[in-house]
Image 1 (tube, rainbow over the protein chains, first blue to last red):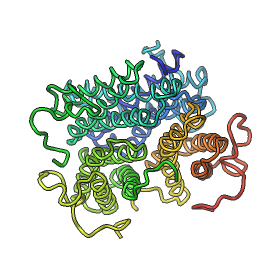
Image 2 (image 1 turned 90 degrees about the horizontal axis):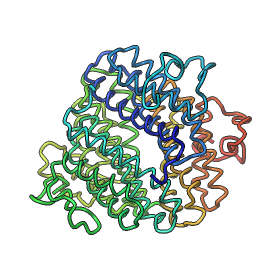
Image 3 (image 1 turned 180 degrees about the vertical axis):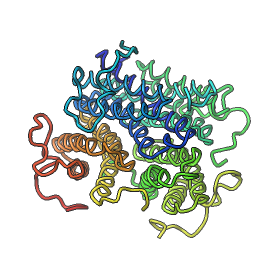
Image 4 (image 1 turned 45 degrees about the vertical axis):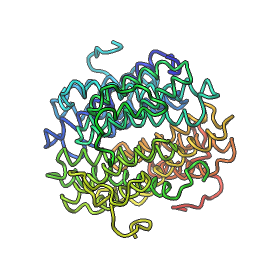
Length: 140
Length: 140
Length: 140
Length: 140
């Protein structure tokens, strides 16, 4: 299609961001509020909704081919990593963990911060954007 | 996945809305601004961006399983119909025409207003959301 | 300012929409999740978040001076009315009730549906969009 | 109001973000598309729309009292600074320059990066978030 950045990594990242946005929003409004308890606690729920928001914004910057998209993607990777970790701790949220990790990895790649990525962040979860078992997904 | 409405038509509509949002945004920011001229005229460009916004909102209502989602989808079908027509008149925007028409049809189905839908749109596809029995709703 | 619709009612409505969006979002994420119980039940919380979304979209259509803004505002008035009613039933959410009612009324005016407007809607609150004393500014 | 972060700097920043979002969106869709020419060039217009998006997201993170809001605000300050600079170069966009600079300053304060703030950023405009004549505004 005309008008979308032609870099395959960016295209993949746009898809991953929009998919992650959808899943975070759907699971926050659906699964979490239905489950209640820890799932509906403010910190977790607001993280999920913020993650959806951040993913939407990262997608927007890439779609509009902003020169600042790399920095937005780097931050999006962090937010997704934090959301993945919060979801993993709760359990039963594998779809959201997967979407967040995929998006985090994809954003980190676009941001040029993948590899040993988020070393040096102290209070932010690195698990989402770095290591762990090789994730199979849209870009293997 | 847990937490997403289980109606297949709604699931399809969520996908179509989010896809249409993406394509409208991408083509507005990409193709239209690159082409300039009529493509970058205010009326067309704002329609495309508004269409993206409306599709996002319709998706949000369905993901959150709002009781008002049918009315939001009915309106989204109108906006998508208007955007499809504007894109068709300009030419060279087939991807956007397709995404908007698909989304309009999908939204009309979820809204319960499909039937002969987008016949004879002059500039606003009112047939898409009305047609047949007088629709009660929009402050009728 | 250049570029914003010059109709004072539209300007007011943009303000009311954006204010309502802010308050719904803030109270959903803050007050409701802190209170828990009925405040954090899915139907209420998703209504508040959807209301925030719809208000944002209505503001977007007015800012972009869309020819479809009246229909979007009519729907926004409904959503705000429903949100005001849900908040009123819960109690302790006066700020949100006020913002939603103000926005509903403002949207109804822009949509050309104020007056006795929502008579006949059965399950949607009419207080927000109908009568009462002529409103000056912030419900003075 | 209940549920909104009580820190006055954060409250001010939320206001500034939402105001900046509104003005960027309004001027992009209004003034810029009406003016055409350099105002409607892709790089400028997409920066304005991205700025609106980023401001909305920063507001969202603060409203939801995310622990990540400082990093989001730091990035928002950058984006606003870039937008202010682009608007200043074009001329005739003082409202947008002002809103972006105010928001950039406010975000930098919340992010804890104000003072000589963005020293060391090489390719991003610092004028928006640092010096210049004392701006009169909500927080002087």
